[in-house]
Image (cartoon, rainbow, N blue to C red):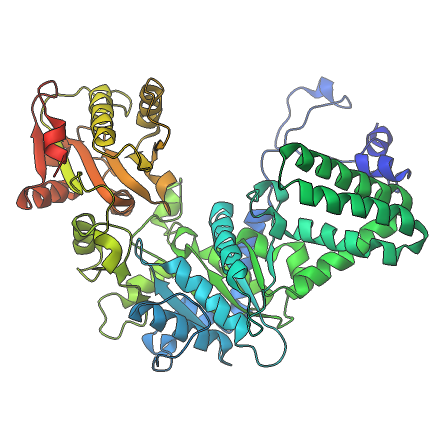
Length: 583
């Protein structure tokens, strides 16, 4: 049975090779009642891979060998201090504010210096933390004296990594002078987890592209056949910019090219691919991947203790637990920059026991808590936000950032002049709530949404988000939205709070659903995310009983009342929403 299975696998059949080994598996189970099935064919389902979990154990075990051990286990302010910040000309072409400039210069000093260290940057919503990260990258890459430098850029999720790569792609397109040649960006990770726009920067794509360029030199006996197909691929690449059918033919040509390589070259094909893959990684200027993937077998083989990687920058560092953040240290890295916001979403932890043991706390948050309220706190906070209208940012700044969050000059520039930027709706009538969904609130939100769209210009594109804490309410909202035909330049997305982390919308409606508070609704991290996604207008919808019983939401109601931005709704049928939300 084993032999038949092995000979049927695709690689062996494509290469025309017989299997080298017959592997017999023995499965040990805790208990197995039906002994009559022994020796028969059984179906086995993969439940989970142990690799990621073992990596977490290894990262903790390795910490004892890291020069950052003391800084991590026993953070002291004096160990986190850097040289006095002095403004200087940077390689980035983006104008930075003072706090951004300080973060970029000080982080770069650490990364290019000789001493190991950790540097923490707190980036509240809309303060340009991605701009800061890409500016640090440019300083590291272009300030090189001697051999080219390499930075490792990681984040907890594939989506966050792909967003960073997209920003780097834009920067590369702008580089056209001789002093700043386009740096090499490699996206490492499984191809199916990489965004299509980012895929041309993936390690797999670049490796195969380089192989196709070199194959006629490596294997001269197939030179004519390869060159003919290569010319066909070049022609189709030109055409595919015009038609989708050309793109499909291009993919077919590349597959045909690869098939010839595999059939004619056998194992040497894979050997050459490995060499090119190693070279691509080793010569990259920026390697982008997830925290979990940064210590894959491939990355370990190329970089462990090589000294090749100058530093590691961890984006969304407050969304990864501490063990994950330690993974890059296993490559022998000694300079780490953590970028995140401990006032927004924490790592997802389902086990209540694990939560009690602080498993869901990030390294950034633990260090931040230790230094909080200290006059010489070394954590740099980006203090100017460019996303929200000042009426929207006022409350989050007060509740979460000690009124330190300033508004950039562009925040008052709104294309929705007829809309009030901020209103809180207190639904005073009784609303029966079932299984974390509220039909009356759905009806009110849809009516509010229609009024908002009516008050926007027909020529303006509008991106609207509806945020709710609960999946059941999200489902009901999306069902209700299916019955409406909005104009073509209006986009409406209804989703949970967690799904909106890292996003921004022109207008946000928040539906709180419940009639009483619970730990999910009153979670201040989630509340901060919900309050800080809107650029031009934010409308909060909650029930009177929820505002009365949930202390956190009571602050929102009282603040709105003080600012004369609270609307108490006794009867939705006679409510003139247009008058309430227009200015």
